[in-house]
Length: 461
Ligand SMILES: C=C(O[C@H]1C=CC=C(C(=O)O)[C@@H]1O)C(=O)O
Ligand SMILES: [Mg+2]
Image (cartoon, rainbow, N blue to C red):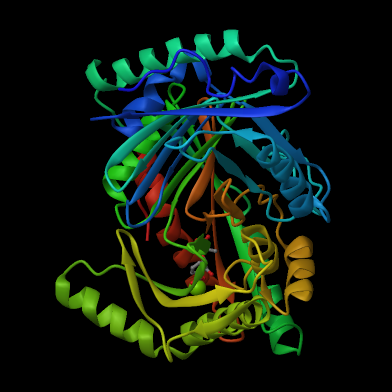
């Protein structure tokens, strides 16, 4: 492990004294499990950690502490607010050859115009953090960075303190016996407002048939009560063992832990390429190979699911064509099979225009008709009027960016909010003219399965 005694460029004392600096320093470490690292930070950094794994498992990240916490309360300006704050930090970065790019990790709320009092109190319209200690595992190599934002030249002492913590976390993650993760003991399941949900689906479907919007996604939530507070690292451990084809995310915000295992990419920017995916239209997995194949084939041919899917392809295609060139979309969907569900899936690739950044695409895409509807504004109004809940960060963009403009956001579905010994889980589905309320209700149970499985709940659907 390479070790520096001072943050690089601290020698340039003159520069240090004149205002804001964003220092970063990386060491490469061998044999380090990002999940064990996340767990090791529990005492020191509880309430200020995050976790991320992409779908193909080429990138895993754990973050601890807040070198910076960027928020926005403003529904209209929130993307711009985060961009401005991040650019300001990036403009004063002090970084040497070999140092990894610091990451900004966080998410947005689904609908900042939803003003209901709810379990989401304390989660602003946008919440992003730069961790004090960040682990990035890329293609099997582990890099641990210390990030520090300082505006008074007092960084040296803080850096020393963080190096000690970093070394302790690395050591603990490498050698400490991890407690075997056990499934939480569920005391009660609350099905909030099932009748309201069925009424909402029916009302929206009738609105569609009467010439309203073409598609609207309606969601609902359920609650779990546990015998004891649930450890966040255990939830991640179960999800990662059980949902290997999905993105994994966890974001702590005080006593709230927003977590999930989503199969849906919103957008990725890497080396000048933009990647997105249309994921909409669902069926459960079969109990046998044969049943699974038949269900998948049925899904590919089903007009109602193809319709749900097509609105997403259309909208994502339109957004990408206006921000990118060389947009490539396959002629028809294929199947995306994850542990508990299969979806219609159409990947999209393009070259973003010069001047288009990741947040431009996140803003333009959110929400796609996989979570909102078509036309978007009318669908959002119907969601506000019909859903008796606050989606919070469910269904919204969650992900990361680096200082070079690369990054990736997923759509935060198959997710829940854990607070001590309580959890709220969220699931919805695309309502179109051919939707049947009881069938949509069953589909939400299939979508609750990943979180229910990880949390020790009884599986339905
Ligand atoms: C709204 C959810 O899923 C969306 C993504 C894929 C398939 C969907 C569907 O078939 O209805 C939904 O549009 C959810 O998981 O809560
Ligand atoms: Mg559906």
